Length: 168
Picture 1 (cartoon, rainbow, N blue to C red):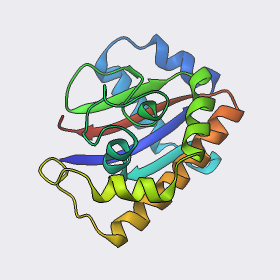
Picture 2 (cartoon, rainbow, N blue to C red; picture 1 turned 90 degrees about the vertical axis):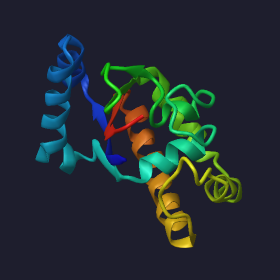
Picture 3 (cartoon, rainbow, N blue to C red; picture 1 turned 90 degrees about the horizontal axis):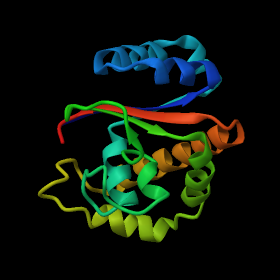
């Protein structure tokens, strides 16, 4: 079961505060605070990808919900990167500011036909969500939103954190 996924672009002050936190609960509380912030939402520094993040990660990597799957830079767009949370029920993953440009550029180069093939070829034993044209269209839009988000983070040299509640 997967929960909503969020990408959060971190300015310098937010990044410094996050890096100072040592315990899982403090990290999770801080990320929840950022997700609830009207300022973050209004500034475009928060991207809510709903549950589409699950299919996005699978299609950008090797088809499974595995943080170690796939190749850089696309494997860092969702679950790759530095794990900030030690449990298996919640993802809190850091993408360094010097990596965001590589991810933004790689997302721009994705071919719709190939992405469609990956989506419709997902393993139905491990991916439990519907697979159809409507879902693909929603996923393709989510991918475009993700690309725009990473482009802005790269332009601003911001770190990005991906967070979601899920069972690995």
